[in-house]
Amino acid sequence: MDEEDTRDFQQACKQCSVINWGISDEGKFFCKSCHNVIEKTADVASEVFMQNARVNTISKGLKKRDKLDRGCEWYICEGFQYILNQQAKALVNLGTSPLIKDEILCNIWRRYLQKSRNAYTNKPIDHSDRKRMISESSSGSSGLPTDSDLSLVRGWSSFSESDPESQDNSIQLLKDTVVSDDEATSIRSGSIDGRLYLRAACRKGLLMSMPLTLAFCYLALLWLRESITLADLLRFVSERHVPYLNTFQYFPEEMKLYGPDIHIFQVQSIPSYEEIQRKMHQLAEFLDMPRFPEITEKCFLHPNILCIKYLMEANLPESMHVWTRRLVKKMGIGEVDFLTFYPLSRRAKTVKYEVQAVAVIVVALKLLFVLDDKHEWFLSNQADEINKQNSEGIKLFQFRKWYKVMRLRLGESEKEVEEQAARHMWKCEKPLFFSIKDKSVIYKRKRMIHSLKKQFVRLNSSHQTMEKGGPSSFRFNWSEGNSERPCFHGDSLEAYVKSERITTVNVHYWVNCLKICRDKYCGHLTKPEEKHFPGSYLFVLNLFSFLLGIEFSILHQEVCQLEHILFDIPETLKRKRKCK
Image (tube, rainbow, N blue to C red; front, side):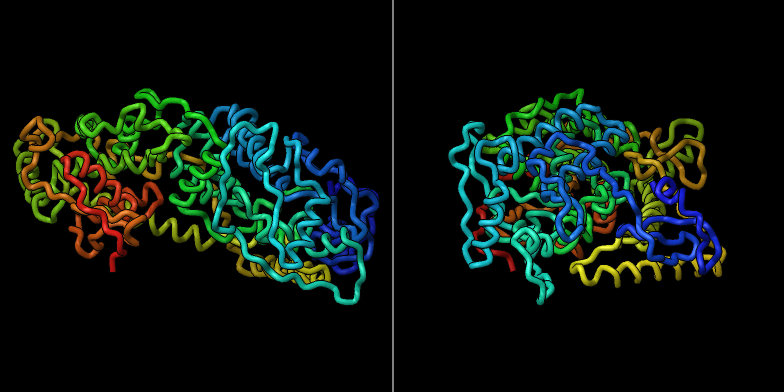
């Protein structure tokens, strides 16, 4: 676009004498070589607004520029629609079904718009209602019309979210300027309902937020039973394969952001696994979604298939899958009713599919090697002697050798993740401002930063661009014949198995905790502390927690719950007081 608009302007720059012009966001010509800004402005304004016009009727055709020349009028839900559209395209590029964009996610989003009265309803929150609520909220009232009488919604239950995503922020205004209601709204926010969105009067129902966009994506992935788990989705977000951080900088030019809009769309961190899991459950209940498609043994989310994936990634023997299948069958966690998500059920719960599969592997490791900092090393010495006597046959798995290889690999990977996080620029390239009068100052400061950065790169003359690796569902890859990183997939476990019965395969098995402290009754996840765990067991937890990108306490709690089911340990009386 810059080349077409600057094609007829052939005047050389007065600073560097180069003809290489570009157009800034405010429409002024600037030199791309030395970033010198001149007084000339673009003659033609872009008319691109939204790529997806499916919900453009929300604004009722108010695509005119305001009197202060700050873009077209738009609503917050249109910004989130644009972000969801970009995320859906990224998921399709990652290999998911194209239905996730045009059918599943689109229908879920339409249902949310209808439930939140933004569109597809006989009683929408129109512009007059929004302005009236702005005046009510400014005068101290927090009332909002209820949606108990919607003719297009059949039996949807009410739902409210108690934690707001943003806090109110005072916006500095021009004191001596007298404007109308529409202009005052535009001064406070780039969008029409940006200031109202942060008010308490608008926090009824499930408030749309940036973490909720990931909940939308995971809900669609779960409906299609795709191979991308929630842990994979969050990792793709952190690796920038799925847009989440600073996505607003790719908005159309007419969608101006400033004031409260920045606090709504700007994020400073990636949400946790449990946060997205909780929001996904809330969203499914809010939308009154029916029973999800059944998860059978042929689905990727079944624990038997997920165990194969994580056994391969953790460089464990393939023969261990026989024991994980037995554990899944004995505990009954592979049943269709247990795995299928049903939001409207009285005992509805969201299964942490990948966490549950990894917890099964941890229980299998404890059954075979105990993991108490004693028996696993004793068994490794015996395996070493057996391998020396049988040098030509299949090698027996040695826990000590596997521990050394994985500890080194884990340390290298953790260091790489820390370095990538340190190199990442959290600030977006597009300048943001909270007040109109600060716009010129911020743009000037941004140009100075780019100019200084360019000069330092020339002086250093060692500018190395980090190549962005392709997306992968595996963090670790192992291959045969690598002496530095040996592969243990073909090792045997026959010498460790003394009984076919799971409960008697190892008489030294120890149970993590006999009392599970639940969040309702206790502030802690589990009673044992990290310092009381055996070193080998703690290493296994940290290894799989790194593979999933979760806290080790979440995995430890899942292991405790599976052990209670496996050994039929009765739950003790639940405490009503919080643990100290």
